[in-house]
Structures are given as C-alpha cells and as structure tokens.
Image (tube, rainbow, N blue to C red; front, side, top):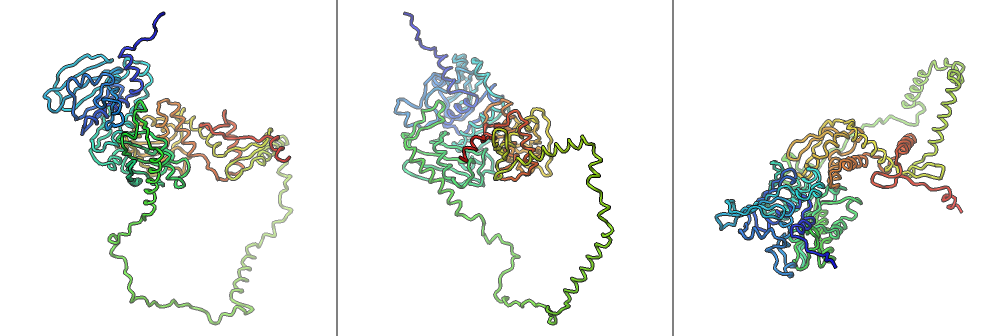
Length: 616
C-alpha cells in the first residue's frame, strides 16, 4: 500500500498561513504597526510606495530586538506573548500568535534593522521566501525598521488579484485609522510616495478623532461614559440630526483592539429608534474595557471579531449608555444666555416711563350711513359709469362677422385632418387610462389586467440608463455654480476620490483640488437643481468605497445609481397626465423596465382573473 499523507514543508505551510493573515498591503500595515505598539513605541512612521505593492516601511522607536530574537521572530508560532494555553485569556498585547512575520517573509522580501537601547550595534536581517539571505551586525537607531518589498512576488496569482493603487491605498488608510484611533498616546505618521498623508501627534481620544476625520465632526459628537462591573464603556456618538445613509464612521474597540460586532451595532441603533429616519446610520466611536478573561480574541484569523462572555448584559448596558447620552443632549438648551456678550446699546427697562399717551382716533361726526345718497354710493355710481365707457364700441363686433369653425377645417387636407384626429384619439384614450394613486403609483390598464408602476423607481430606472450613457460617452451637460461649494474630505476619502474623478467629470461634476483634502465643486450635472452637491458627491464617494474594488463598470454603475436615486421624483409628488405619459413611455423604451438597477421591482400586474375573483 502506498502512503499518501506527508508533512508540508515549512515554506509551503507559511504561504498557506499567509493567505489568511496577509491578504493585501493593508494587512502588512496592521501587523507591523501592531508589533511596534507592543514594543512600547512612542512614535511610529509608515512609508508606502505604489500603495504598498512596491514597498512598505514601518519605523518605530520601541524596545528593539537582540540578534537571536530578530532571527527567531520570523519562525512560525515564535512569540514572546504567551507560554501556555491559559495565557490566551489574559492578553494585553495586540499580537500573540507569532504568525505575522513568518507569513510576511513567506510571500515578500523583508529587511529588518533593529537595536535595543542598551546595545551599541544592531542587527540587519534580509529574508525572501522564508529563506535567510543576510544576517549581520549594523549601526542603526534604537527600535526597529521593517521594509517589505514586492509583496506576493512568488505567488503571482495572489498579486494579480490586488486592486488599483487608489483602492489599495484607501484600504491602507482604513486600517491605519483603526489603529491610531485606539492609541492616541502614540504619535503616528503616514507617507504615500513621499507625500505626507497623516501626521498625528500624541493626544487624547477626542483630539485624535478630530485629527483623523476633520474638525467638522466636533459639532456632531456626544460623549458616552458608563462604569459597571462587567465593562467600562466610553467614547462618542453623533447627534441624531447628523444621521445619513452613507459616510458614517462606526468603530468599536475592545481592550485597545478594533472589532466588528453587529450585535452591539444593533444596540446603538436601537437607542436612536424614532429619532432618525429608517435606513439611516449614525457615527460612533465606542471603547470597551473588559476583563481579558471574559473575551476571546482568537476566533478570527485577523482578530477582527471578538466573542464576549456576557454579550446580552453588555448589550443592555451599551443601549442604556447611548440613550443617556442622547437624553442629556436633548435636555441642554442650544442657546447661550451669557448676558456678558450682549451689546451695551440695548435699552434698559425703566419703571418710571410706564405712562404712555393713548393713540388719537379721528372720526367724522357728521357721517350717516342711512342717508339715501351717501358719498360712498356716489363713488360707486361714478365707477359704474367708468366701466360702461370701457365697453363702448364693443357692440360693433357682430356675431355674423365671426369666422365659422368649418372655415378652418376646409383649409386642412382631408387626409391630414383624419391623421390628426386619429392621433388625438390615441392620445386621449391613453391619457384617460393613466391615473396616479396616492402620489406613489401610476395605474394603467393593459391587455392582461391592471398594471401598477412605482413612480420613483420608474424614474430611477430611466435616469440610471441616462447617466450610464453619459458616463460611457464622457459627454454630459454641466451647470456651473455661481458660488462654488466646499467639500472637505478625510485622507482615505480623498484617496478614493482621485480614483473616480474621471467618472464624476463624465456625468457633469467639476471639482478642483485646493489641497489638504479640500475640494471646490464648481459645476454639477444639469437637471439636479435643489440637491445638495456636497452630500451628493460624498454619497457617491462612499458608495464607491463600499464596492472595495477597482472594477470600472461597477464604480460607474454606483455613481449613476446614486445620482439617479437623488434626482428621481419623490413619493407624494403629483404628476400631470403629460408627465405620467412621458415617464411610462421612457420606461418601456428600456430593455429592462421591470426592475431597478439594484434589483427592486418597478411594476406589477393584477390580472383580470384576480380582479374578477375579488367580486365573487
């Protein structure tokens, strides 16, 4: 019998592990920066070239490593964080499994320079494809410097699936933001192709949030703070009036670690019930401090999900804390009654000046409304005389002088008259068959029964096709703004915007970069009057970010759909017969009129048989 089971070589095992831990350049940033934080660094600098595809460098001023430790760190499951299984439930560090460096070295070229504070010289190590190429003594500053080049150079299939530079850079900044938001006491910087993207000095949580996402967020935030035996929850939630469908910042952190938690997200949203419209979201930055023995951070390859032992109890604590924050906000008046800011010219009330003279009324004591010939009646009769003079001469226009209707008809050829009559009859019959129901649906009769058309979705379907044609042709009418609108974006939003500027220009937007994440909107597509261009661009931007890829067709569709949803007629808008006829004609001229681009039904039909059954 032939044996078929064998042990994988370490290099192959490391490449398989890298498939879970290292998915894209952003994964490098996460693992290397978390290692720097575990090394008690006070400053961390990240430098990327070509969105991390060419190189990623992370420099820190932490404790550094000895020559032996620097070599052992690249072995799989080599870690200084745990010694036994029980240590998994008493973790206070970011990394602990010892997979990151081994996985990175398996799929990239890595250079490490590191030195401990009490050592005169450090160590330089070069590894490629899990093979040590160089290990030597070198002069270097205290701390560690990791340089990772040519990610996935030996796994072409993985490298082929990397996205565009704009998408990968956006992913890097998203991962970077998650780390810096939970470590405000550490100074961070991020450079892309030599240009500074972030420069964040050490600060507190509130200042770090504003430094990352902009000071405009300050007016939206409400503080949250609650202490219990199960958990300490702190952070900020946004005010209800700043809720939006897209573009909200939602972050949970547990014991200094970013996490996704749909169950806790529902607790936050339940606190906003009946305060925000259905389907809209709010921003929040919430930090949980719990006993490490009561959570499990080892349930996800990238440690993005955490299991809590007392989830239901913490859910109730979180919901109550958010409701309390909203209650305090609603109880505080928004007007400042600081009298010291009042101008000195305001008059002061003086009780001595309370006596005021009554107003004088002039009347005519000789006026008698019962006299037969009052002055008002005289004026009325005089006005009647004036109106009679106005119509003088009209009697000369005799009925016999008016042209007969038949005179007009004889001037039109018989064939043309018959064609016009047929067209008029067709339009009249069609118009009479269209009816609007409750400002939401258009009803019309068809051969099989009664058709109901959702007027908003029908218009979305029509506008989507129109905007898609404009995007592909690159021809769209743009309407200049008299006063340009200012758009302020975070670094991650600005990076994504650069990737879709061409498509935005194709539909009619004119944007000019002012530097520092600021853009001027100088023009918008014609026909979207009344819409907020800033919110519209921001919505399209976040729709593109949610796609998470650089497939041009999908990004174009996302832009066209967002614009169509914003520009379409709203529910409750009363349509004339001509408007309904035009909308129905344009809808059925499309190849796929039955569904919106995102899959919602546009129309439905009630058959004659179903209608007949209703009356039996």
